[in-house]
Image 1: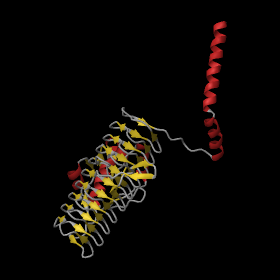
Image 2 (image 1 turned 60 degrees about the vertical axis):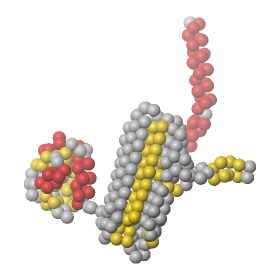
Image 3 (image 1 turned 90 degrees about the horizontal axis):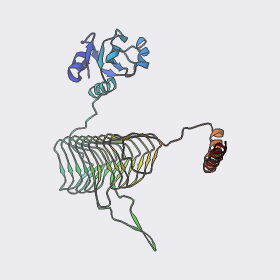
Image 4 (image 1 turned 45 degrees about the vertical axis):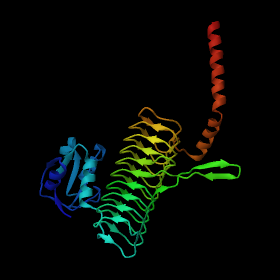
Length: 343
């Protein structure tokens, strides 16, 4: 695909400086961009790369108008602008509509005429797949499951029975929607399984990364609201609710019945206890352990930074003795107060 800078500005806005007829065929990093490619600078500390770039055009912050003589588009958010240009120039491949002969589709499943069902896919009884949606190879869509319009399910996605996915969702390879939550009652003979009779409800414009698992609710539904972005290898337990437009990075674990607010950002490998609530707009740093509710939005961190092994060992000894050190400090403070009162 080829597009002129003028066409980009007409579509996405921004201020054009320089040759609007310059043709762009692809996006690229500044250090390897060529004359028919466009790069971007979001932070002033990278403006020095403009002197050596071979890019045909660049996207810059509004206050960097004079940073280069190259044709340029000025935007208050160059990173977002770049994302939109990349999306325009790199549309996802779309397979032809229809059901592959090697797919297995229940007689009463409802599949839109312009949907695409790949080889090896299984679509259960009463399932519905919306207009222009794509179901990749070896996907399994359970009985009475619902897939909205314009969805993209990559290979080997599993949607369990009665679960629902909204419009324009993207589910990456190997993700599992609606598996049983971890519910067992102790008994004299071991563990008694608790049937998980809820569903998973996924809103519009959600993206779920590869090998992420979202468990169905025990009694109520697990809910992923519109615009949520989940990275790879995330565990979402039963009855969790994740608010709209929250983004969660890889390897995070969220225990059951926790409610995460809207527009939150959660770093990779965070661990979140169950039955707690996290306020809208909260940010949680990488590797942070959240053990109780966060009623006030803010940035929360509990991870310790790395150090050389020998240094870590010494600090670990000190951490084990923190209680003793605190008691010594209290005794010293008490003694100091006594001495001051006698003087």
